[in-house]
Image (cartoon, rainbow, N blue to C red; front, side, top):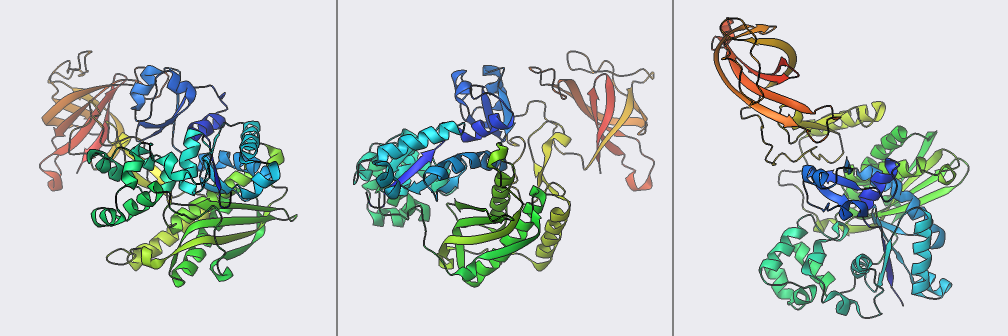
Length: 525
């Protein structure tokens, strides 16, 4: 049993964490979305026909009582901390691959509890007591153990390759913590080439894989062959790479923890750069004012960037400081923080941008914004992200600086009734009156047409119309009238007379008709 690895996988963890955050029962139908598509759903949602990849609207049509929330890695990490704590009580030094998945060495635990099966049973019971369900997988190699956990299997010693051979080739891209972002493209290519199982991929020679595919294919090929991989616990590195911070005053709020995390991440990456290394496994240590010590190890498929390191520090400290059970929280504020790069790779495996790491002005600006963020909170500095929507304001969503720029909805979606190009340059919200030639108000009928031909505009923006286009009717959130955006609306583009010398060609406006009232929604400049 030397070197055996146990993987613990909590199914549908993003949906489980979302249900816990909303204080919903475990049986409630929950879906987590990214770009308006379902990426995770609970068993209750699947029972009603919800599946990964469905659009939000279709999933709600299949399950009207579905609770839909956007993806939140911080929430997933925060609620997973209770599961990790329950595992640590039985088998210490568990390593988090991602929220919902952890691995640990099973050799010592198997000796203590009598067998690997006994360890698996005890861990399943411990996780259930923490309020979650899980599956256990045990194998010789870490990737095989993760895939075995998805099947709930304990692989016999020396049978890793035999277990992997009949699995679909798509299993190689099923776990994001074991693959690069473009692993799915590789799997699709192999499928089109007729390679349908992991065993068939393993039969290819190393030379053929190396010459025809990229570096990630070489890693996938090693996984398929069940070749020796690094285990859950990494080698100790020189202490000078680590970073230590004495918190004065002690940290007891997440905003202070986030600021400390940003500062420590910058120091850590300066040390890594000087050592020409990148960190793939990071240990976060915290000591409270009364001497209690907290430790967690994060593992990543790719070397951590400075922003990614800061995010993981923030998530971890948030998990420690805001555990659901007050009895599991630290007994006092955090007095000392320490970062230890448990596993690194040489800088030879990293490729810098063609023109360097970026101009100095941009770096200084980002540091200033991070400073403001640390002083005022993580949500104080936000960056716009192109999102999906019909109106101009709906197509802009904001994320905190340093977070992943995930759009609120998929901008590439069909969006029936979407505003045609070009988009307005200035957003507004000013009530106006659209009038016909006789001065009577122009409305939008139930058929989505003007009640009369528009001729002039009155209000803050006024003048005779040179040109108009539309209307483009939209009926949004008709399935949920409680939503603030529910109801019928229509948009129109108009060009009004403008006596300004700078704009003698007229002024272009975007009008929106909602709740029997016209508003200027945007200005074209």
